[in-house]
Length: 294
Image 1 (spheres, rainbow, N blue to C red):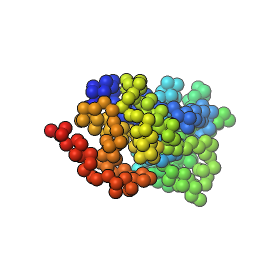
Image 2 (cartoon, one colour):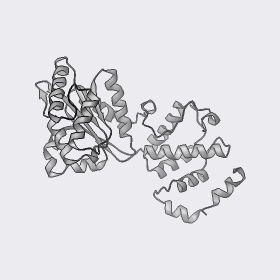
Image 3 (cartoon, rainbow, N blue to C red):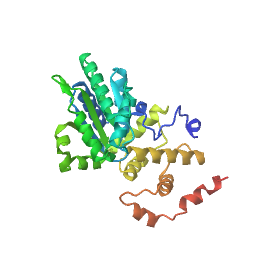
Image 4 (cartoon, rainbow, N blue to C red):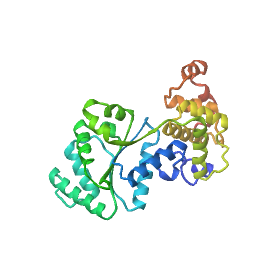
């Protein structure tokens, strides 16, 4: 809605996990390098964890782009609320296995055949599981057993489990100790530091067509970092709402008053937010915006 007003070629703060907007912070660069290395070196089990909105799905999308560029076969499970039968059926569909996809036995035979053929050609196969913290215990056990498929050169199937911190706690359970022992690489995404948050916002605006942005001042970006608590997804949501508010007011820059209104609408909580609510009247920004309402 506001792209033409600001001169953007595309929306800079979309919530979709678009690899073209991937910001290569030090921790994200390291995590992606570890994922690629784990696949190339046939390490077997890799875990990617992080709080909600820290960029895990975007990391998986970047990895998918890499796998496709290298012609590496992979299955991507995006819905983890499945039982073991559905798990094997989804693998069969994603890898296009020539078998009766509702039969676990036939799926396993067909999967093993594909893995052996790929290994003989010097290649590997990857299983990506997003939202892995939701997996049932029996599905996690099936995944562990798939990790036993190997030859003298390494694991035949590279398994990447991505999830919230609950995944790490789940893997610490005594009944999953065998799976935990097989995890060779762990990557953990933390919220952005202030420096990363500022560079992240600048990079997205640049990508969208505004290399020398003047919409957000440094002071405002610092406040956005505080109120988002460094979570990329929340930063995107705040900035998107700020740009929409500025567009409605026909302004080419945003200020703290706009940010206050956006944060109230989003019901955000951050350190010091309760003090702000007692200091600012609820209708302060509404009165400022009233003359522009239709």
